[in-house]
Length: 240
Ligand code: C5P
Image (cartoon, rainbow, N blue to C red; front, side):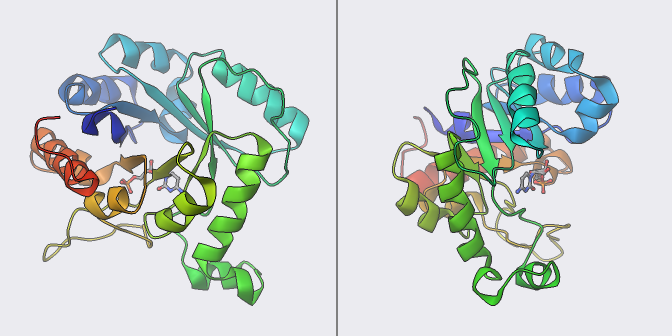
C-alpha cells in the first residue's frame, strides 16, 4: 500500500454534483473517498456508483450503524451489496458479526468520536475509569475485534495503544486530523486532534481528512501535503 492509499477524503457535501467535482479534482491524490450520512441521506446509494465512475478507486460508507444485532447484520449485508470497500458501525456486543459474509467490504467499528473529550464522557455518565478517552477507546477496540470487525476508528491520540492491543493486521483509521497548527487554524468541532505524521507514526493504517483539504485555497496542494505527512510518519522516501 502506498502513502496515498492511506488517505481517506471525507466527501462531507450534500449533493452529487459537489461530490463528483471533488472526486474528479482529487482522484489522483486520494486513495479512498468517504461518503457520510449527509451525502448518503441526501442522494441515496446511486451516489456510490457515480463517484466510482468519476475515478474513486475505493469507497468508504460511513453510516456508523447502531442497532440490535439482527438489524445491524441485515444493514451491514445490504451496505456490502452496494460494493463499498469499508463500512462503519458501532459495536457493543461480542460476536455480533460472527459468520457474516460481507464479501470485500471491511467493517470498521467507531470507538469514541473524535469530537468528544473527557468532559463530554463525564457528562454522558461514564464512570471515572472510562472518562479518559484512551481507556474507553481501548475497551471498545477489543470488543470490536471480538465482534468480528476488521478494525476500528479512533483518534491519533489513542492509535499507539490500539495498535499495540490489536496487533499488526487490524485497520486503525484516524479522523480528527489537523496539519501542524498555524496561527488562525481552528480545530472546528474536533477535540482529539493530531497531525498526519503523528497519526501514522503512532500506528494508524489510514487517516480521514475532510475540511483541511476541502476548505483549503488549493485542495490538491493540501492533499499532497497530507500525503507527504503520511510518508514522513511512515518514514518512507518521497517517491514510494
Ligand atoms: O472535516 P474533518 O477532517 O474534521 O472530517 C472528519 C470526518 O471524519 C467527518 O466526515 C466525520 O464524520 C468523520 N469521523 C470523525 N470521527 C469519528 C468517525 C468519523 O470525525 N470518530
